[in-house]
Length: 530
Image (cartoon, rainbow, N blue to C red; front, top):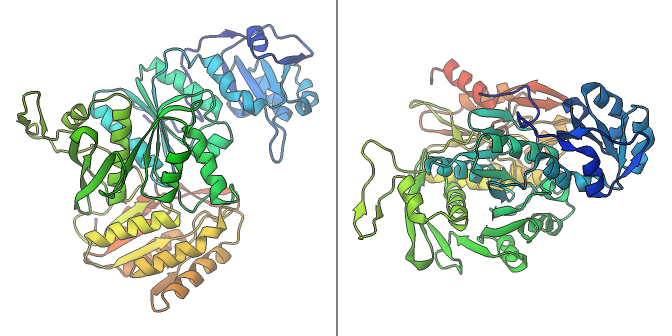
């Protein structure tokens, strides 16, 4: 069941707590009417208030949240928490006003207190890195399901508890939403929770009030330099997740320099993984087979432990994501042999006898990841992948993976985010021209930027990299995909990078309904390929 109308997952049976005790326990000040109510929830959005909530008025870039205290009262808020600047704005609402100098810093601990999420917590997994976070999270959830464990999931694409799903607004929810979601998961008897943790989530205190049992690091590559002025600052944000107040154990892929640096600077016990069998890492990964639909690999670890399996996804980078998920599970206490058995891979029993696959079962990790190199084409015509990748490293990994499994041409269709890190655009255009046989450049969330100017940067970079490359500019995404399809033949590959799972196209503040996956299927039908 997908609940697209909700903005957050909340407990269905919240347990009220004393608001006066909250004020006392946290040492907050009060202004005006003394608090005397109970509180059963907390939110920073007046639109999300439900009766019994504590409304937190935060100072924003354009407005102060305390200005919406009256709307929060009408929706059933029992009090307002804000900073000294917001006191006068909130006072007119007639609610009790609680004051603290920096309310955002208190959100995680407050939400944990209100929702009691520190009481009998589930096993908590956190995944960070520039690329691969979502894939690792889905793979973790899939393996846990195959192990018979009820797990909750929060990613860029969706939040999920069993068959209840809502579409995500942020990679990592606000702290108030996370703890409400954890309380809802407790009601559903969830035993493990996987959170995708962005750098912004760490620096903006969205994961405060949580101590992860195991955190994983995929990589650090060029992205988000609109939020972090240098790669060093970006790395430092990620590094904070690998500190004792945030996590108990960590697993790090050390193929790049940032992984090695994280190992040196982390303050929690770490386990390392590398795709280089000669690397100084506890676990190593080798690729056994790559096809357009599946990647088989072998993971080898300490004490001659070994697991061979596959993931139904394109590329060696997806195998690395799967390896990270497996080792995170091992670090949380799962036996590698139990994981192998759950994945229906042959393994040795206690007497050294090999156990075969269960009859009628397909070996491997049973995972579906929306919009991550998702193949949406059929048996005939060009192979079409829709991917969420929108960074230079993501382009490189996926294009190189496609090249290894196809003899046909590769047509690359993409654009670049408006109002997001512009420093990566030239590299994106260059990589597309160097690694694809034809390039179609289109609009992708121009937001408030001039879309023609964004396309021009990509076009100029592509032409400068490979002047003879076949390059087209088609602004409208639907027309752009049909252009790509018109120059593709049987056995060719179209990679549509950027939109992935998303179902909108953002232009000048308006989210226009658009699903690249649905549109691509429609176009394939129009051409007789589906």
